Each structure stands twice: as structure tokens, then as C-alpha cells.
Length: 376
Image (cartoon, rainbow, N blue to C red):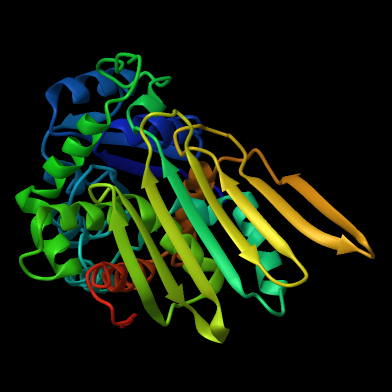
């Protein structure tokens, strides 16, 4: 498909510098970065020097209203609703990093505004474009009797795992080790911010404790990737049977029932002492087992491992498949461009984000309840 997509980028921090901006910048025949916005003058100046043709602004409104911006990439941390509503009003196409909102009410309100807008909106769930994930999805759908699914995330300290990147304006200093108390304190500080309190309380219950909000925050910021990926393979969940948290609310587990009796066991555990990110999805039937092991999202072009277990007569065959070295972040951004220029709605829409929010809410409300919670 010919033609360049003229892009304004809002939020020039870590994920933008590690993944999105390099992907946009490596194909000037497909993308033109025409504007950058960030609230930090230091970040904006440093990143702007790397993309010198782009207009710079500390006000996102100045980017979304520019006539030479076809599409806005919303990559900032925290809530996105104010930025998104301004982009919708300006008639721009929008790519927004997850989550669309914090809490189901906020997510549904933003989704409704997106549906009424002139442009397309795509939510960034890069795992849905991972070549190994797509291959595994086809395998799982071929299983006549899928019975059990396991999703596990062993999460190291976030900053220590991306220190090989040069994040402008200054590279994060290397640390000899990670302080778990410091990691937990950072999560508590983020969970108590006024911007997020309303959404996290809505996920749990009015007046939820600060510790409970930490667990909900991990659902929205980290486990949401697994929630979306699992929905992409399995469809919609029916009810959350149980959910529990431990280790100062920095570890959690839930059990969810899907149609045809399929059970999904999902765990997330903060383990900052070992610099080894591990994220695994395992799909089990009597005759076939498929396991996806994702690398850290901060490693570009690291392939996702797909292991397939099956029988050949009396022989157990275990296959390790490297499906592709294509980068999932690149695939999703190129899909967004093709959707916009081709006039076709992206595969991953705001409806996906709303369905994710329903499952997240059901998990959050099961933390302190012995009664199964339907996914409304």
C-alpha cells in the first residue's frame, strides 16, 4: 500500500523510545513523524534532536489540532482520556497504548466517544500480532477438546530489565541489584494518585484499600496483556471462580471459567531479584499441548518460543518452533497504517478494550469475595 502516514506522537518516554519511535523512523517511506509532545522539556528536547524535522510541543492539544497530522500515537503513561477526547474531536485517527482506561466506566466512556469519532481508533496490544501467538492460536482452535489454560507472569524489576536501552535524556544507571521494598513502594505511590484512584476503586469497590488498588493496578498495567491475548484465542469468559492476592498485593492468582468447561488459571508474581522476565501461556487438551513463552517486551526482535507436544504412535514428540523474528510492535503499527490508508477498521478496536475491562473488573471484585463473579 503506497503513501505515508503523517504521525504525531504524544508521550516520548520509555516505550516510545524503545519500540514505537524506532519503528516509525526506520521506514520514512511509510511514516512521517511530524510532531512530538511530552510534558518534560528535557525529554522533548533530547528526543526532538533525534527526530529534528518534527514540531515539538509540551501541550498535546497543539499536536492533535495540527493540519499535517493524520494520526496520533498516544504513548504517555497514566490516563489517556483527556488526550483521546481531544484527538477524537479533531477528527484524527488514533493509536493508543493500553489500557484505554482505568476502570470499566472510564473505558466504556472513552470507547463510546471513539465510536462516534470520524477517525479509527486502535488499542496497542502487540502480542496479538506476534507471529508465534498467531500460529498458536490456529493450533488451539484446532483442538477438539481444550480443557485447561495456564497463564503465568514472573515479573522482574521493570527498570533493571530495560537498562540496556539508552532512554533519553539520560540512560538509567545500572544497579547491582533490585530492592523489593523500593519496587513495592513505587507501586503504592502510583496506586494512590488521584488520577487512578477512581478507576481502581471502580474495579474493586468504593473505598478500596490502597493495597487492593495496587493489585488492581497490576491488572490494568501488566496482566491486561494476557487477558487480551487469551480472549483473542478463547473468546469471552463466563465467570471468575476465584481470585486471591498475597505478598503485599504484589502477587495474584485467578481462576476463570470459559465456555465448554475450559478453565483458565492466571498468575502474576513480582520477583525483582532475578533479571529474567518470564511470560507463559499454556493450552492443554488430551491430544495436543501448546506453550507460548514470550520474551520481555523490551527486547526487539526476540522471537517468542512455541513448544508443541504431541504423539506419533507411541512416541512423544516435543517441537520447539521459532515461527519468525518479525517484531510484534512493528506488525501492529504497520497494521494500523494499512487500516487507516485502506479505510478499514483495525482488527483491535475499543470493543476489545471494553471486553478486557469487564474481565478485569470481575477479577478485582473476586479478591475479597467467595462468590463467583460473572463477567458482565
